[in-house]
Image (cartoon, rainbow, N blue to C red; front, side, top):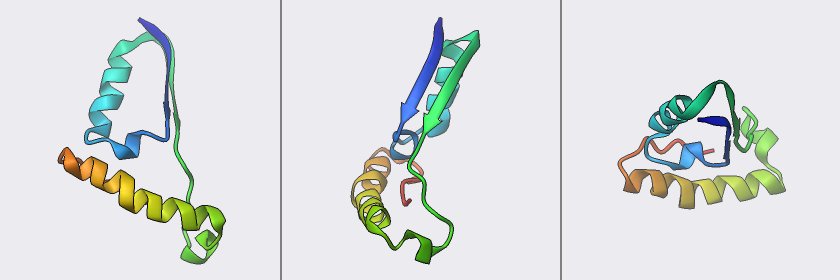
Length: 79
């Protein structure tokens, strides 16, 4: 059994993020933990009009969404 599982900038790209989390839970020791780190976007469009926002939105749209859709996933990567 595993003590810690980490997901870095990953869950929103895959076809079955819920399945991945269920598998992680089953793989962890009872006192284990799971860490999820995803990029953060602000709620208001005008707060994302900066270098990071202008990079993350197109990358998310052109890479993350199609990757998920290719496996019939939910396409959560639209930032």
